[in-house]
Length: 144
Image 1: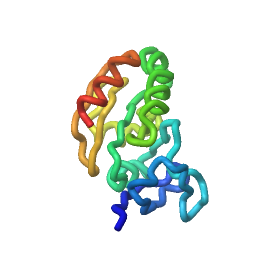
Image 2 (image 1 turned 180 degrees about the vertical axis):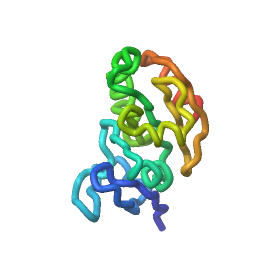
Image 3 (image 1 turned 60 degrees about the horizontal axis):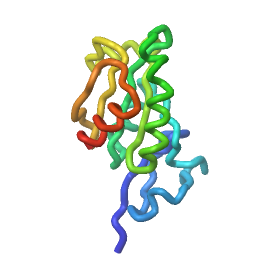
């Protein structure tokens, strides 16, 4: 019998139950028919954050950033590249701390960019500051 994992749809935030061996099979959401897993980071808001971070059985790496932040802009393409490389084993998301100030405050974000790793809805670790591709990849691999 197959083991199942819960994956939150990047489009509609619906929780989907997927056989573990089919995680990378380009499955579609049962509710909206969009791809459940995307290779690009999911934009989270205060409405979607708790469900996306808490209900995904895969680790979730979140980039807390702001549009006016120079290091955030520099790191954004690196974050997207790592998301593509680690797909489908890790979920990636972004939180704009400028438009989601309450969410940034709830998560204790004091500087940006801050990258936080969540597993089973709980923060496992975080690191502040921009990183290059190799360092970000290594940090994620060390902590997942």
